Length: 315
Image 1: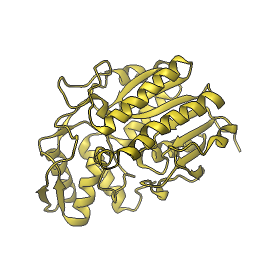
Image 2: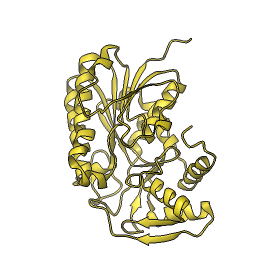
Image 3: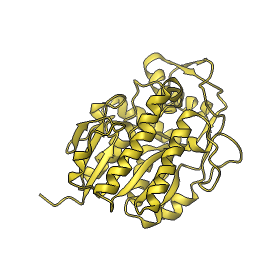
Image 4: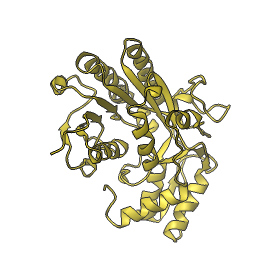
């Protein structure tokens, strides 16, 4: 058996994005350890060939796994819903802030040469003009979820000054195969796709004119591959966005056209802390990686639905 490229720790690896990250690392020859508490993760997302430990990353109960140090740490565990952050803000702090601080302490102690890559969020910017959002702009996010992500980025800055290689990836609206269609609290595209497939109706919380910047999951993976060993990404926060914005109405129309069936649209209030507009500037990630990966929203949703119907959703 060939020697692994290195050891990677992936938190949240039973989840949507981190599951894809772990699978890609394994395919590229990495030894991968996954931590997940399975509160929202799906065991089907955990790739073959990984070592899985059912662990709550927000608790200091797994220090022993660092006895064999890691070369790369992807910290993508944590709840990712603004709505849930209001319903249970303490849980949001534990999963999105406390977990980051605990991991940073362990990495500093046991594997200070590792690259620590954190799943931050577009929410740190808030929904205020001007748009598109650049990494140099003031972070005006005011909801509970955004505050937690901003706090984690601040802790990372401290550890970066102490010598750790850290990168905060500000994820915009990521979608694609592997999203949890049973979870109707996170993932705008997946929520609408799930409702359309199962009920032939979509409940919209908020205006159909709201806009978001959507990024297909395999474009995310391609960018992350180029960031992993890239010195230009150290000590930075980087937008991972498409640079394009689409209304909720367009998303719904795409789903309706792809499924080719009548779908009832039901308006039902709004979500606390929601924003009316969001689009990012992707100049920095293109500069750092020297690449531009872009799957059209229509094609991405079509592949998402196709894979679900073919029962290849988590492959």
